[in-house]
Length: 477
Image (tube, rainbow, N blue to C red; front, side, top):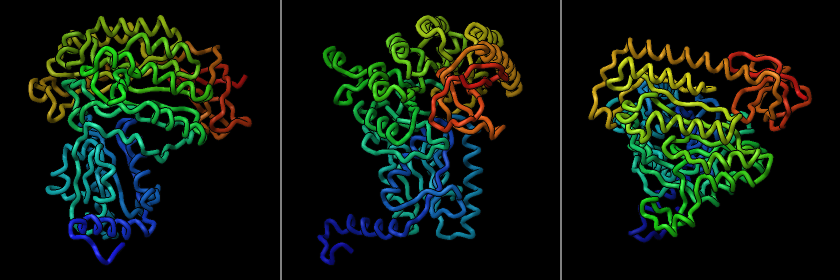
């Protein structure tokens, strides 16, 4: 104990500190497993930083861990099913390791807290996305044999002062979170309920984190947010609608933040995800064109090619608006790669509306797309207001048609790279040959080329001589 004489009003606080000290002083190991979006992986790095500061080390073998954390995704039912099965697997490990603690982090933690703790008894801790600073206290409670939970959402938390511990596989690319939460309230999406309302992070802390990553050998930064285009730092963290015109004029926009990060060093590549079509302005596109090290790649989720479906989804734009944004990208960044998210079989979607999505895909011809059948999520507007009435077999057939169209478009786009020279950031040894290296060009297309004397983190110019449907193959020039 820090002192034998403890003021009664501070006895509980001192006891928690003492339990923490005993808990973390033994060099215990944590195993972190992440599912879902890039934001979850970035959050896992924050968790690692908080606990390493308290004496923990990370391990890649869950069988030797003292604590297992599963950072979860609630965006689709399939993702939740995978996580639940994983938790059952880990629960079996407790039969041989009675002291093992299991914790659920992230979006599922908020949504299924009571089910995990009380009904299925799968975990010892449930920790929401805004409660990671409380992990030392929660671990202390769980060590004492009690279930620990904190899923309170915050209007201020951005973890801006925490330097993440990089857990990525290649040591070349790093994620930097620039904002948390979402205000869009798309009718199909559970994110505003699991991650809270939108709040932007102070730009100076973002630049500092990106600079530190570059100084530690990372050569690519991806700026993360549920809707990066709506990033706005006013100095006081006020919402856009509460700002005066003078405050807006003195605020940092996402385009300006892009420039601040790009100016760290010309060899630091900058990417970002995810954009929202209703907020994608030309200012961001012009900033991308201004700096060579801001990658010429835009992920612009469309979800549907029909305006009526988009309205039911509460997306805030029409088919015509979306295609106007695509035209702006092609005009300002003619060589840009474009990808999208697409949902098929949303509530009430007709065959004609499905055909509108296919025709939009033909117009745009994305390099890549994330494609899914609609999965109803609890608490969303769609669950309350609309009937999930498209039969599973029709959803499956429509998804197959969308996937087939995208496969064809990806092949068309990839073949357009033949004969071109791309500047590629070397990321890893090729999965198919130890004599080849792989990396991505500015447009986010994977390129494969001879290893030679190259190492991870190098830049190399690659002349494309052949390709598969989604990979460019070439030689160094």
